[in-house]
Length: 494
Image 1 (cartoon, rainbow, N blue to C red):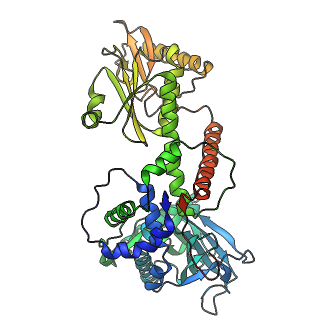
Image 2 (cartoon, rainbow, N blue to C red):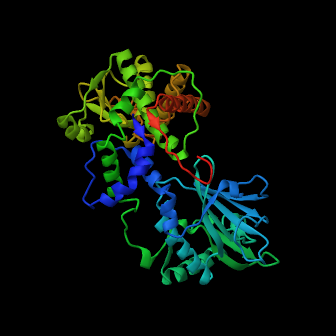
Image 3 (cartoon, rainbow, N blue to C red):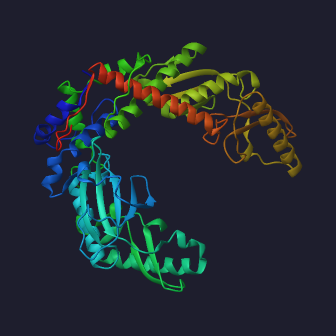
């Protein structure tokens, strides 16, 4: 067994009770993906939500019924807002005929997803409404669908207005609205309410009949807000992963998570024909990232073997030395995520005969399965200067140099090397004689401003292929009994 999610779910309450609040930040590897799964499992405990008096509604009760007529008002990173006149599914006063309803996915690793923090946000929103800063909240609850996806549903007063962002087309009114916004924000802060996301899209403006003035203004989306009285740390806050490090360590110690076997399986995985198995969102999202990282690591190893590139293995001496290697004038050292490293190494090998850089020895230092350093060793300090640091003796010399640089880029494009350079970056390196005639044009293709894309379509295709392979890999693990999914006995379905 590589990952026993059912046993983890059942053991989490016991582990939490045994947590002794010592520091558990001493894990050997950054297993954020597994830690997020544990965090989500803890948040998916229905009893944890009920403990805080948060109502649970199941999908068969109608919340996600397709018959519910609703119109999309807006969409964000974590949710969608609709307007609806179909209020039979929610608790609202009898005289309310239309509402705004927000659907927020519970990811399990967001601060706002935590039950006790959600209660604080709701209290903050209600307080802001009492003071006239926010719309009224009629109802809120957690909804669970048949795919074990948890969502926070908020039913609010519908504001018949436009956002400050939409008001931007009218410059005079926009300026007036911004002044009103700042005054409201200062007043709200005096009452102890702090809104951390007051961008234009989160400010609603109700205009007068002639649309020449702001009749009323509301702040919306209080998920990233707090009250000064509530602004205290708690053990589940995002920047304090102590308890989740502990839970992860307990799961590893008790054999419920086997990291080594997981990585070994993925490293040796060969694609098979298998029916994809629907997995809970939080499981797929985190395993998907981790598996893709290992696939890219495997690809980089294959490239190194193919081109006989020196691989420097991780060791204590090198770990301390690596951060200062870039100070060595004979070297170019750059840290990359495995996805980027693969592209850059391929490009370096492809461009060797095109005189992009002086002769160098290429080495790869693997810091982990996620990150590596690409090291170019020139043997001696190259005699070049950055284009943007050169003091040109005349504008004509500078223009002539730019023309030659453009010709060089066109030449590279014809040979299948698609890069984009900026004269103000560290990308262009020139070898000059005393009269500033160009002897050689070099391009540091490891620079951040170098874009290694022929077209966005290629990237999309690569992503899609990996995404498909990863889904099949997870399905294979489940079929082979290496991953045991959690079972939720919820209102007649599992």
